[in-house]
Image 1 (tube, rainbow, N blue to C red):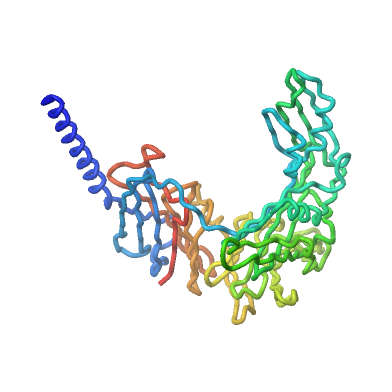
Image 2: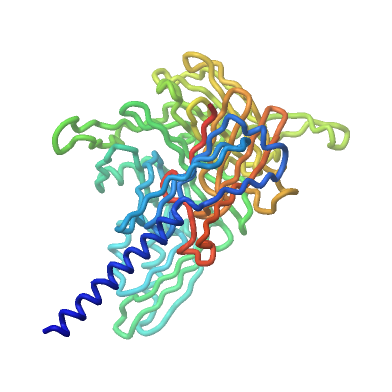
Length: 478
């Protein structure tokens, strides 16, 4: 009994000592993170008046909020907290989006019921056809024309609203699919591979595009109980974009009304789409215009539409200086009640055929970024009118000073009327942010902020310092 009691006391002392040592290790290091500002281009004084906040973690137990005043000699403020329970998941802010696609590239394995899979909008008719010709215990591979099975592409449709729950039953989904009639191209072929077991059950399916493919890009916006969206169809041949004929009755902004099922009780926040009332509310001016972006204006009265339109411009470096047709990127401001065009301006980009990478609304401006890494900042006047381009630039100026200059993932921004500040991480869940300052003349400052601690957190990725999943960065001018 005495030996047992003595052993218990020893273990208790060791446990208390270990807890004390562990906490002391954490407590001593909690505010030892230092911030090293590395200037890549320009003068850091250009960032004076800016506050950069960064939220990072170590192993999802240790958390730091680090506030830095770039362009000053002030020491960064570090706020630390410890969670005994691992906090490994943070729910990101929900966003409005619509996803419309056709499944022509997929694989399945197991004991497959092909008829059941057909309900999920997958390209199953050719799969079932090839499966009928596949012997038990064998395999079969065929290249077939998709048009032999479908007149229009079978579609899968997903819609998400922030703070709203949509009742998307099979009837609603089928009505939505029936609305979008996109003809199957004559050149679209797929390669189907089927494997069966000895009993004749399909146990493996592979389906892949051959040479030709399509991509459907949908953008959405919401005002009150109305959902607006626009589609863009892009065809590809051997991986290269090719001209694609888009059905004229789908070219424009479509309106899908939503029925509010109740503000109180069990149905609070639930909405039912009304696809039978869906219609083309704003046809594009030209049948070959492409819808690339759509946002709700901050006044909740206008829609902001980005389109690619064909136009004529003079190419000074072309032989003889003749004019030739090239696409233009246009921003249209549309009054949502009447769907009348209020304003239209052209957006500059570096490469003639550059597409849209992002189109976002911030507190006092809108930001458009192209896939050639050029961008423009757009502001509006009073009453949601007089939109204009306040600034345009690009990220390519950093290429000569930092090989990892391209922004990765979400960017946070703030604009004070003269200077645009942009912060971002260069790599997934990286903890060291980049900061860029632009004026109308271009990039005037670029810096990288590296965080370190006396526990050398970079030795192991999972024990290193990294950003949180949800809103780790924030940026604001005084």
